[in-house]
Every structure is written in C-alpha cells, then in structure tokens.
Image 1 (tube, one colour):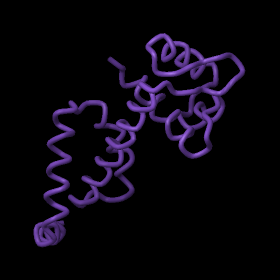
Image 2 (cartoon, rainbow, N blue to C red; image 1 turned 180 degrees about the horizontal axis):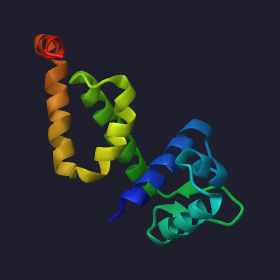
Image 3 (cartoon, helix red, strand yellow; image 1 turned 90 degrees about the vertical axis):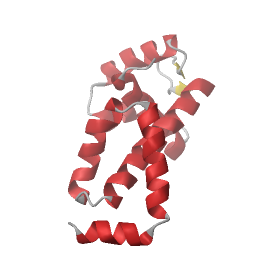
Image 4 (spheres, one colour; image 1 turned 180 degrees about the vertical axis):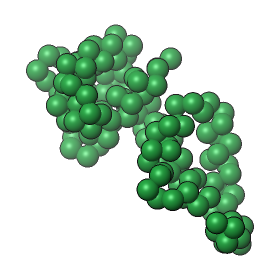
Length: 134
C-alpha cells in the first residue's frame, strides 16, 4: 500500500512521463519543491515496492503497476478538482483543497464522488440551482 508521500511522487512521475516521455529526478524535484536527493531516495523506495525502475543517472521509468496507479492518482486529482468546481469552490482554492483531501479519502469514497459528479453533470438544473446558492 502506497503512502500519501509515495502517491505524490508516483503522480508527478506519471505526469512528467505523459508530458515529456520521460521523468527526470530534477524535474520531479522541482515539481514537488524538494531536493533531488529526496527524489532519489523515494525512487529507490518506489523501485523496491515495484512502482518504478530506477537506475542512477537515468530517468525514472514507471513499471506497469506504476503506470496503472499513476493514471488512477491523476484521475482522482482531476475528479476532485471537477467536483469542487461543480459545487462552487473558488478557483484560487481548488488546487490547495484537492491536495489537502485527496490522500484522506478512501477509494470507496472516490467511487461515490465519481457517481455524484456524473449525476450532477447530467442534471443542469441541479448545478444551476447550486450556483445560485453561492
């Protein structure tokens, strides 16, 4: 089971890989505002857990397990952003709020939020009424 810290690293490695075709230690460090040595240490841990292939002085490569989990983490983040926008959270707060709650929700809760977002997207009247209450 990945810890919240591990999830943050996997998510960033996945995002870099998707955007650039590679995930370099320095890029992940910059994204997370940590030292490259911290990324190296976590990369070694993620390698032991089967999420990445880590070779010194080379980019980070997600394993099949890492790719699958990274995609799931990014989708979770995007879904929570979408949910907060629908319910009218101010845009300036959304990223910080998502970062604050994403690791504290069970995957079961995420499934329920997914269902709720899908239902709300199909009910324009509900969303409009919700916006009027702000």
